Length: 304
Ligand code: NAD
Ligand code: LMR
Figure 1 (cartoon, rainbow, N blue to C red):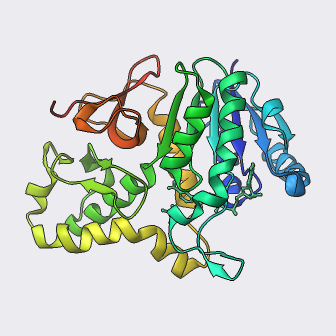
Figure 2 (figure 1 turned 90 degrees about the vertical axis):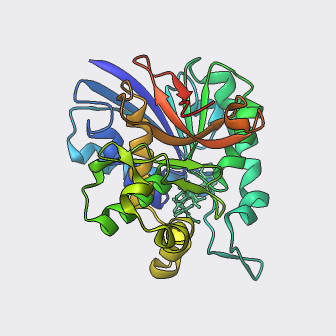
């Protein structure tokens, strides 16, 4: 059986809990691939990972390989194919009497995490490792990690698949469509309230989604607001930030790179800009992406 080595930080957290079975079950990497999991947590809660390890064992997946628990990123990063960097603090919590309202406010708390993690991955993970940052503020954390990783052959991404899934769900509800009818959904920019879910270049049954929807007022007011503010709406309703849908989007992002992207579609994540679409080089920015048959990720050229 083939093997894949997957590192997950924040593995004892909410997203981590929703993620692990889906990584191990064969759903993500296929029924012919053993998944070796390196689970990473802060020292204070690393012992909880033993519970996750026992649960994974008790699921009885043929595809589960080794499960190892770590609090040291250098030890955890060796030979890793994939790193899902979830471990960080969510907004909505109160620190020193101040409620953290925006994802950007998390930078002071979370940014430092990605300096050390980036270095560890750059030095120890495989040359062609893919690294998906989920922890907020995801784009900036990815930039910090990528800079300190300083390993050009590795691919760093910040997650915008959740925003793309949210956008597709809103359109499907509005137009009474199947999700699979909606393709080429791009989230331009940052996983923040300024993100831009693009219905002009998205397609419904081969036509521009904005033309198909034919309701500019809905697009400019309801649609944009709902997608841009969905994370906050979930925190307000649930009392905690999205976890199942975030884990699902991380799985979608991994899967999107495991086979060649179909001609009539692309996927959404933020990657290092190469200057495409006049986005300054070196920013981590949400683009339409394609993967080739070897899993190499590149920016789709809708126009030059
Ligand atoms: P959580 O608090 O339930 O879990 C976070 C876990 O990370 C905790 O177990 C904590 O101990 C661990 N952790 C903290 N620092 C760590 C470090 N240095 N190394 C390893 N582990 C560490 O939070 P959650 O709900 O799982 O959310 C995690 C992050 O994901 C938050 O920043 C949240 O805002 C973000 N998020 C992003 C998206 C997205 O679309 N990009 C969606 C949802 C949530
Ligand atoms: C989300 O979009 O659900 C996450 O980024 C969590 C948040 O803080 O909104």
